[in-house]
Length: 381
Ligand SMILES: [Zn+2]
Ligand SMILES: [Zn+2]
Ligand SMILES: [Zn+2]
Image 1 (cartoon, rainbow, N blue to C red):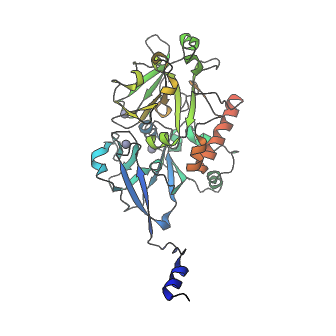
Image 2 (spheres, helix red, strand yellow):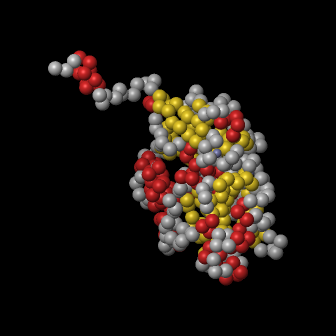
């Protein structure tokens, strides 16, 4: 016969107490290199938190992406820093005329978030491996004249993801105030009088231009692969990258990359990003990949990979498209052809955030069909 103690053990074995009003759950966050680590304790009753995408020009120019993906922590929730990582390893940047302090890892450039005068944090959701939010808010959607990322997420006829459903029901929150601070981009020419595309981070510490593909580039057996056969304008190629490394480092769920031969960048960009180039700092995120970010404002700027470097003179670099100043809009449609049929690393992204990924992949594909009559799926390696 079982004893009272044994009966008690058997009875309670799989029992989980329902969440009470004061229960909290802890979530761990880290930058890519691990120098910045912290955790947050969130009231279980508040989950999932409402995630937001900010489309303003400041976020685009401080992240290098089309939107910043964050969550505002409930008042009173503090970051529990591991091993004093806050003071030692963070660089802060405040946009002139603003009050919030944006913070990023000094070593790898991972954007951590921003803290306002009240001490309340907005943190980047990509720092967490466990999902405790749902994207339900868009800040400054009108700051993007051509619709930017928003246009790819919300095609009216796109498939019915949760986001789509909630938009129909009017639950997605769009910030009513839309005072942006961007200066319209002007057309720019180089010393030779031909057109240039300007690229610049928020603080201006990294600033350069890109010309259109020349005949010499088109004729090059390797670099010619990165020129789009578009008419009448000669264009480069671009794609969306949903890998976790790019997401964590940039503080966004997707990074738009433009592929450009290193040798066309003005002023000259040092090979493998090693050498002086404005306020650029570098970080090796994996064996073949070196990242370039602004050491002052934290913007993601470049990715140089050994996979696209048959010789030093033919190296192709990724340029973060959130920094572009194309007069026609953030998608730089006069400068690039988008690989809308094949965003990169979507299978990994689906595991991490299925709702966002499915919505973006389908919206992007349909946009391509409308623009190009097809969904291009050219190779980028
Ligand atoms: Zn780091
Ligand atoms: Zn913003
Ligand atoms: Zn900068």
